[in-house]
Figure 1 (cartoon, helix red, strand yellow):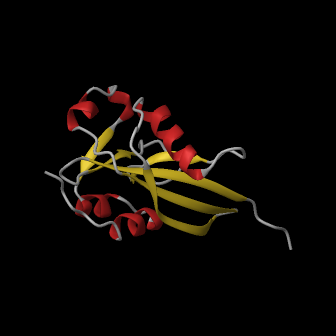
Figure 2 (cartoon, rainbow, N blue to C red):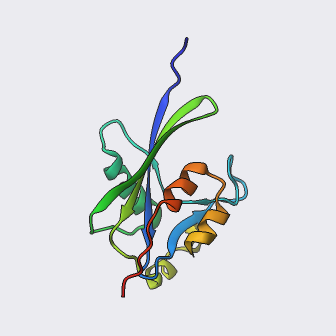
Length: 140
């Protein structure tokens, strides 16, 4: 039996001080999950850790550098078509400022949403599971 390839991906979940989650709405022309909410992230290169990949992808996609530590939050392996994915979700302890988001180029399309809205906006089961088990404690 042929071994299916395993693709590692890492995502970074970022919140503001009011526990709003920041993500991206996938463009309507996307190959999969068009209009779905997604988190910054992507593939893990052979020579990097999932944590490093999550930080690299966040900087590449938003231009922001996260200076605070990030922590592993949730992981899952699943089959998607002809590939197996190992998905790593990290949580940033740094709370992003909403005014930082307004400075992003419009094409980036980052949105801010509550936990309930995020769960409504995504059909991706690993995304739902990662957010559903997230504890929310707004900071003053």
